[in-house]
Amino acid sequence: MKVKITCKQAVDYISKKEEKKLSPMDQVLLWKHLAICRFCRMFTSQNKTIIKALSGFGHEQDYHLPEENKRQILEAAFQGNA
Image 1 (spheres, rainbow, N blue to C red):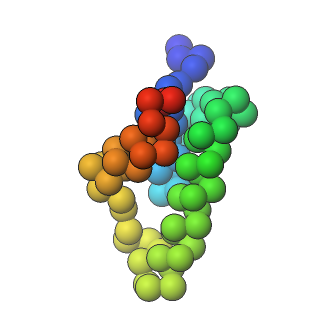
Image 2: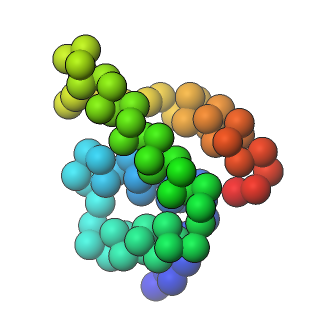
């Protein structure tokens, strides 16, 4: 059983949580990670802001950030801190 997740896994969990596809156990793992990782808390906040902004363009349910874009955002935000 996992007791800890990486920042990369947390980003995936954050996306799944927004899509309501995160298991209860994974929600706990994400919560524990966010409690100690300010970078992922910042990513969560920014992700919510982007989703809210996109809802004004009619994309609230069908918008998914491509994996390549997620990777680029992570690299720019964490710059080796993940």
